[in-house]
Length: 73
Image (cartoon, rainbow, N blue to C red):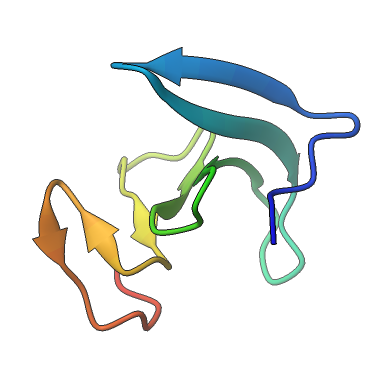
């Protein structure tokens, strides 16, 4: 199953397709930049305009390390 691209932007990095979009988070007051790889192995969210920068990893891979697939900050 592929990633939904309607209304979202595409970017290619090292011959790998990613889809990104910004939207208001359901659980907070922040807008989130969401980035998803075509195979959905990388799913990350990053809040915009926060005092402390952080990334939320929701996928199974982050920086070439296997993740648990759970929500990790």
